[in-house]
Image 1: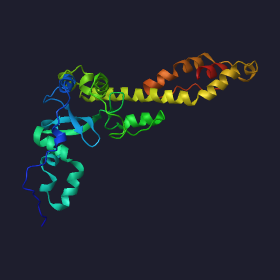
Image 2: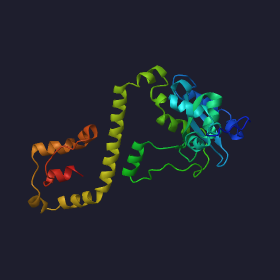
Image 3: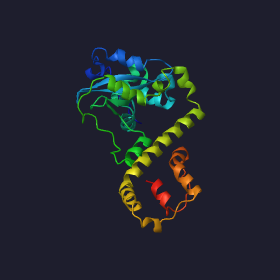
Image 4: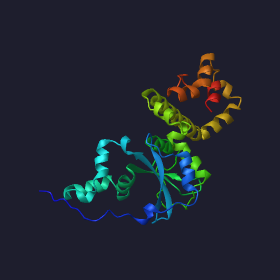
Length: 267
């Protein structure tokens, strides 16, 4: 039979978990992230080992999946030995403390570090793809690798850009209405358009050497003999292909780019 372990002592509360925030921070945070039952909110956490503040997104109890509630409500030390390692993997000591004290599921959201108001605790899959296309590192800066940052206007602006409630003017009713299948579909389509814009930006940069060569070559008289004039349909297709690609993800078929007008337009 599996043995259940119980310490018989109150759960440890680390001093850093209850460290007061600098003056004015809490009021400023509540201005953009009120504590209400109908949506998640943000809370500060001090990280003593790197001397930096983080923000956690806290989901209230009635919005947490029932299976997750079971994980949060029972500490690993109260489980049979063969289940303890798994529980410690999915629920940290801090998350257990936050559930016990505030009945929320606390997950890392933002790190107050660097000179741009902070960095995300994690990138979404779409953000990783966009960063890879743009030749940037797809991994978030590790906690503590950048200098300490205060919770100021830069941080508020950066957090607002990632926060769904801010996108709906702090109107909780509007946020709930936005959780429809149609609105989520529209939001996903907009994100895909951003992805395509990022791809075109990367592609344009990659094609720059060829573009410079074609610009030079088209200034030569011999190009008139090697590149024919474009038809009206070809010219129209080229003038519209970028906007069409951003909207639909489909590249208009303009035929082979073998004429003068098309070579100019694709630059």
